[in-house]
Image (cartoon, rainbow, N blue to C red; front, side, top):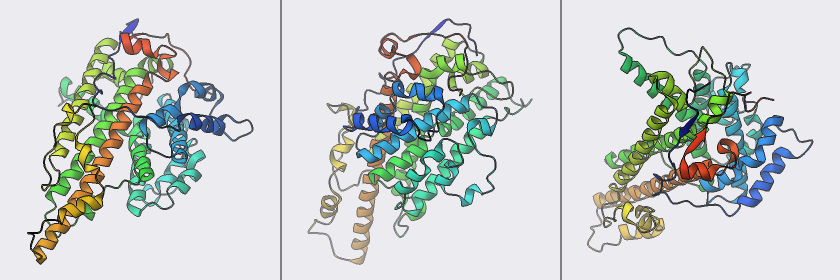
Length: 428
């Protein structure tokens, strides 16, 4: 995919995420060695091609996992590192694919997605089947609703990849050119949200850390569920924003590789935000880069505003907290109080000596305690999303997948000189 520009200038993606604290996992080094051993040890049945194995040491997937999941224990971090490794190479294969088989998906399965577990769905991919046994052990004690969510997200991941192989819908005469452009862009963003595999990662880290967000059907409907539903809705919004921020940022930093190694296909749209924007809106590479960069910044702002909205749902018996943007370490003050042990919060909820011990009061206290628990779970999830965004964006400049050894130069100055077209990056 050639471009009329010899170079593009990228924004410093780490600048707009300064409100997100960057943390790291102390098990990064040992996980790096263990993951490399898993894939690179001779005579092991590695699913990676020779070219992919060559890229593995400088890709720094253990660093990515350590930055995105700083509180996991070493076995959990190793599983997530190996999963991220396969997820990344699966995406690179998908970019050059024109058939499900080239993506890595089996077409011989006759099982229905609605009756198949998420692990079984992923096992139909030639890369992910390598880790299905590990995922099964990891999730053996997971509650049924976790398995239902993971199955839905695995199916959405598979569907998004396969759907992206299809030709774009024909231009409808009743739509204006502007409407057509916007439809293509919106459809791509929704699709890219799932081809990134972000929701699968959210599920895995949720299980690893013991976090839980109930679905709306589990709410205590004996009391007005309005606030609880709003909390759940806000968490869903923030998950989609986090997925979009990382996926679109990934497309910005990977555009040079994409345009030089991905052959244009007449019957499918390019699966990179810059290339799609160039195609849909007839922009130059720099013009499309600027537009996607603005979109990423807007989504970061939307995420911060959504966090403020979530903060407004804190239990009413507690004093309001300061705006998180004013806190000294730039981490949200929201977390400075909601991390109290649930026993402490529950005790505070029931500590008022003037509270009548009537049935109505008991129901109110139960509702308040449920509100606190739900709010704590939501806050845990938001911290996971913050770590995911901060970790991924900083990794973009550390891995050699996108800028080679010049990540710091690109971060400082933004200039990327576009490569000439070459063979696909991950051919066998």
